[in-house]
Image 1 (cartoon, rainbow, N blue to C red):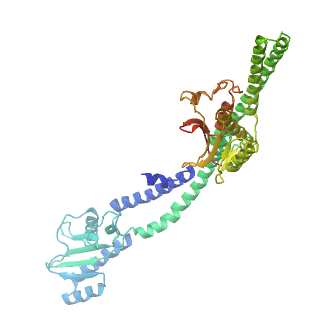
Image 2 (image 1 turned 90 degrees about the vertical axis):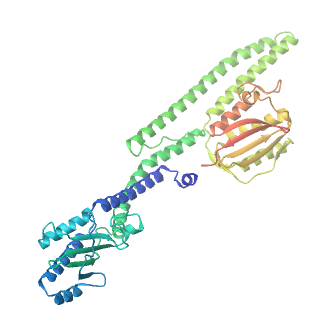
Length: 450
């Protein structure tokens, strides 16, 4: 079953084409079985010719002398066909099948014999198998043989062995039907399948691009009505998403502006107070509040910026980041990796990775970068530090906005939230794992380039 799943095509067009081909082949096979079981086995011309020669031989045996009859029957015989007069019938009495009964009845009518005349007709394959042997067995393709025994008035029998042509020579039938009927139907249906599938494929690619944070031009509505409706719904969804993001950005920008005004007024009033611990605490709190408002607005603005996507080498991007930190004499190590392509928004992804590296440097003092391709084709970035790690309950909690990993670390708790939002916008995922005895590891998984 696993091997069958690997051979089964993945695309809808190929699956439908394969199913259609199997259906056409199955219809030919069913027709072969049906005709083999119910249709006439002997070709009409060969049937008439065989019965006509039996009639001639019968009249010869009655009207001519034994010597003349033997001479004429020898002349009618060939390498494959034989007629002779014998004291016993070639075909012993047996329960004849419908095909054989029809042949015997037709011969009686031609010879004007009574229905009581025991004419023996046995239709079989030259191998001796039943004439209606299963068509998919080797014996079912063997030529036919007709053995006959007709009683004569003098108590002897006219015996004959003939090889009539089959009504259905399957090699010729299939050689005709497959290219003449199956191939044109398959090509025509494949054309219409492609017409149906093309808009769906385009829509799937557009959805993938939007899921990675890219906004695209409205798709052309082509194909069948159902595909047109689906494309129209996608275009409407993208417009509504853009309107939603723009509205949220405007609302938070207005809130930030409105909050900055009273914060500034409070700061001015506090600075007029006499110096002391209370004044310093209030100024510190106002500074944190201003930073939170500023970082929140930056977060929303960056989320709303529609940076163009590009396909680039993720290895080169990590190499640039590592060299930047090394120039600043930061303990960031990077062993390099083969060129692995990724479709992304470069600036947004750089900011997300920078936040993760800064987080490792701030809390552990170092960061080790690595890049590899997983078995399923995804790209895996690991940023490992050598700190104390985090309690298990905090591994997911620190991604929430304004939740800080430590106390008085100089941040407001948006770095990891921004990083995860960016990674998810690229269709990936970001998790934190404790790696004893090393420390904490930020694992970024991203889909490869389209």
